[in-house]
Image 1 (spheres, rainbow, N blue to C red):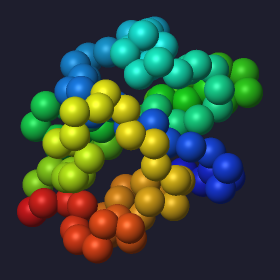
Image 2: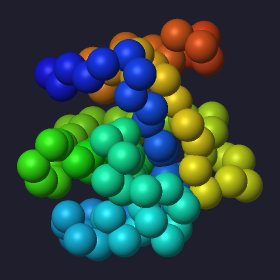
Image 3: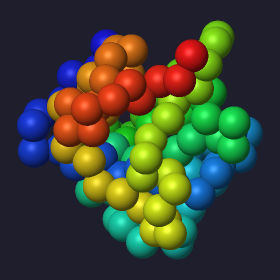
Length: 114
């Protein structure tokens, strides 16, 4: 599992992303679509339209890194995906809980629909 300092912010792009995008495509989407500096060291999270895959892009001291997760059953669900915003900022502990198959501690409901 990934481990990051508590000061790291997580930018969730609420617009569906083409999962064929890689380092350059996702960093451009972060810069122009989300409006944040992709070199800031924070995590940039992108989901596909079905919500069963996500990519996390981040700048790691000497280059880009991507973490990719595909659920075999179900989908990642977030109440924030229904908002009319292109980005939502989370604290790192919430994303860690969701990626471990748990719940969003702040939402009080399951974040993975089965």
